[in-house]
Image (tube, rainbow, N blue to C red; front, side):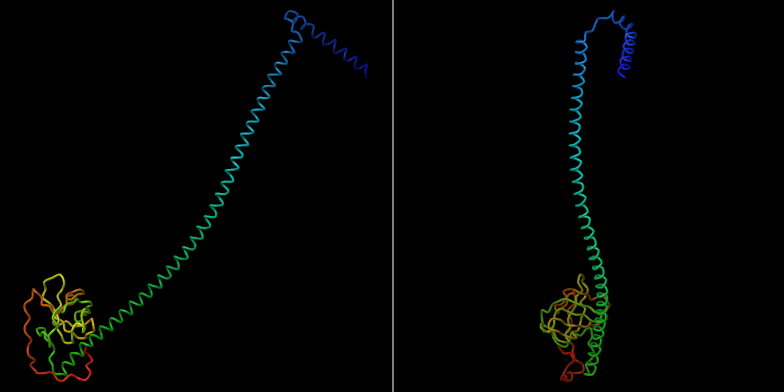
Length: 276
C-alpha cells in the first residue's frame, strides 16, 4: 500500500511538472511574486473578509434587536387590543342588558298606557252618564218647580218680571257651568244672600249684547243653579260670562216689579224640596 501510494505520488508530481512547464515559461517573463507578498495579499483579503463578516454580524445583531423591539411593540399592541376587546365585550353585554331592561320598561309602559286608556275611557263614559243623569235631574227640578208654581196658583215667571224679591246689591260673579240652553251654574250662592226665585243677569263676554235673565232654582253656599228665562239659543250663555245684579250700562233700565194678579201666594209648605 505504501509503495502504491508513493508511486501514485511520483506520477502526480511528474504530471504537475509537465503541466507547469508552459506556465513556468510564461511566469519567467513576469515579475516574480514572493511568498511573503502572496501571504500579505492573502492576509489583507482575510482582514477585509473578517471586517465584512463582523460588519454583517453587527448589522444582523442590530436587525435582530430591532426585530425584537418590533415584536415587543406588536405583543404590547396585541395585549392592548385584547384588553380593549374584552372591555368592548363587557360594554356590549351591559348595553344589551340595558336594552333588554329598556324594552321591558317600554313594554310595561305600553301595557300601563293601554290600561290607563281603557280606564280613562270607562271613566269618561261614567262621567258622561253622570252628567246626563245630572242634566235629567236638573230638568226634573225645573219641571217640578213649574208644577209647584202651578199648584200654588202662581203664574210661571215672565221674561219681563224682575223676580219676587230684591237681589242683594253688589252681587257679581261668573258663569261656571252651562247645560244646554236652559240651565247654568253661577259662582255665588246662599252665603251671598241669594235665594231661590231671585233673578240675576248674565252679560255675554266680549260684546254689547243685552243681558240675559236667569232665575235661581237651587242654591248652595257658594254656587247656584239657575235656568235661563225667555227664548235663548244654545251657545248664547257661555262659561266665563259675567253674572250678577249690577245693571248693564248699555241696556235700558229694567221695569219696576209688577203686582201679583192673583194676590199673596198660599202659605209655604212645611218642607220645600227646592228651598235653599
